[in-house]
Length: 71
Image (cartoon, rainbow, N blue to C red; front, side, top):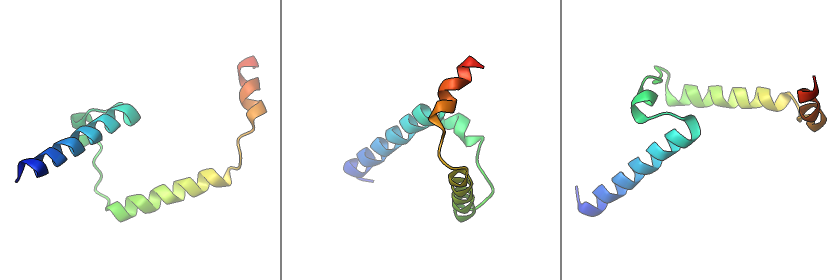
């Protein structure tokens, strides 16, 4: 593996590790415990199904968000 290629992969690793930590508050080792036996295609289909169900809920009523703390 060339130094340039190794540098690219190191940058990719750092970016991925940072994203895991920022978006999911997980380290690489912690994320490994969430591995799935399902295929990438199955997981992608499930994500789309969930997104559709959320979309079908309709828009968020902003007034409700403001009123919630008053309950």
